[in-house]
Figure 1 (cartoon, helix red, strand yellow):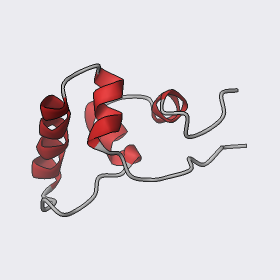
Figure 2 (cartoon, helix red, strand yellow; figure 1 turned 135 degrees about the horizontal axis):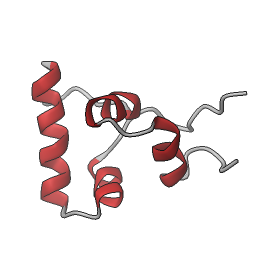
Figure 3 (tube, rainbow, N blue to C red; figure 1 turned 120 degrees about the vertical axis):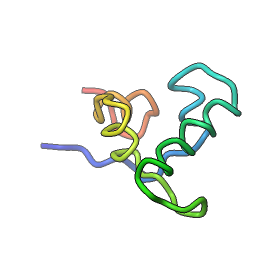
Figure 4 (cartoon, one colour; figure 1 turned 180 degrees about the vertical axis):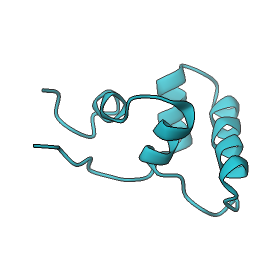
Length: 71
């Protein structure tokens, strides 16, 4: 059974925690993804899009952000 995360959108604070980086670097990473996917500044980025773009395991990110219970 696949657990669904409690939310879909990734925020700069999440990226900051994942990468242990500054808020400005986290925002730049999301901007990089928006530009690569052709999204406008006001469009949200999903956790899944972030994981696919940066080649990070989706389930691991959800567990790290405590969006799904650890197995």
